[in-house]
Length: 546
Image (cartoon, rainbow, N blue to C red; front, side, top):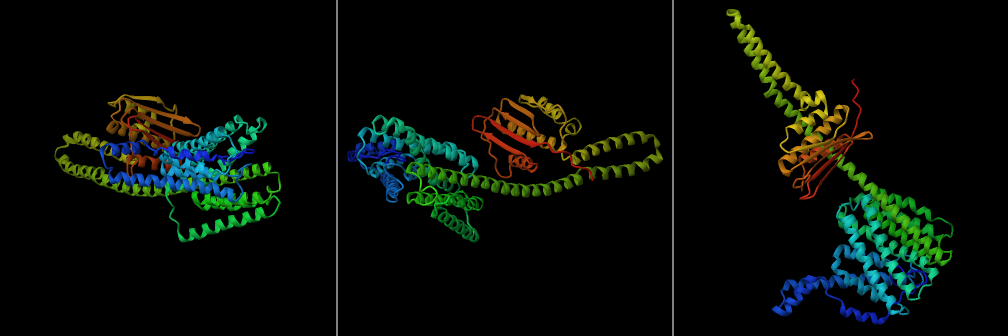
């Protein structure tokens, strides 16, 4: 069986191919170098022996799992020489290399060679199909790491989509190489190439889609901390999926749709790994029913029944995973908003204490001193009225300073220029006084609501302060664009990069402020490539005066 064995393609493996196992390299360049060093320089270190033992054990275990998955398909009769509904070894191989590393690739070659039960294909066709199966799994792992693991979005809708794209592309590699080799070797007639490719691709993709997503989710997030109630609910969900699947595939009537409410329940209540298990259970019953001529697909022709079952497995699994990803995103968003609101409450309390302190130490002290001074001067003026003009001018100046201080406090510390003339004016003033050139790319032509302007000002001010203090930037770009009913603030520099959104940092405070008004805050900062801060702030109407 090669990949998902396609229609009309007997998955042959000549016994002579087993001799190629003796030529398998040790797997990595480092191991080869240490081996040669041991031959030349004397006894090899014990740590190398331990590493080599772990590597060898990993190859053996993964090859055994790959072989067992293939034998399971043969034993249960859903994998055979004519068609494969699902080809589970591809899922086992991608999951194994994703966890253990690409250096374990010889295990896939060993398992694929040993798993073959047929020897009727030409040697060249068998070799090409084996190479395609190994390349399929390597491509799938590389794409998974690039599209999912590197971006840290395992349990998100984007991560589910990236996983599906990686698995679909990997399955296409094996199907294309295998079917092309079979066609060139005269195993498949030219008129059967497309159906064979379709069956092969669907079988590999379905097998990978059933097994790989839960491994990716567990790997990236670790096991969720289930409470007792959640454990019981999870068991009930899986039992419901199994029961509805039994109902769906016991009768020839088209009842396959009855399993979807239970799958939706699993996606809404369980994490992505749990939803993947539920989808795998439903897929197993679908395969079992079709193989044993039960359910809506079991009474059709073999080709039609295989295609319908593959479509059911793909649609049911992918839909469940997408809904689980959306649910996880909403759950994390709610948790983030709760944490953000708690931080904002603490910040508001701290701000209240700061205002009280500033009033006490600033304006209150000045007014008290002015009152004492005027009381003293009042007694002097009765004796010498000529100093009244000077006393009044000094009192006027002092009251002006107090008024400016109170005005700043009343506006939350905003610059008076922001309050009087708006965001464009205050950004222009900041650019004029900056020691680093600031390029203002775009600014709104009209004033924005006060809340929106304040949020945009804080984002720009904090971003400029970080760029001037830490980034060692040579140039800074600032842009404020109106996009629909939102304003997009974009501040970027060409500095050192590497900014981290640490807890209680200024960047986290900006995120809290932006998200509190329903906006989106993003930081992109690669070391050596500068920093970009982007905030999308909705334009909220002014609050009504009550």
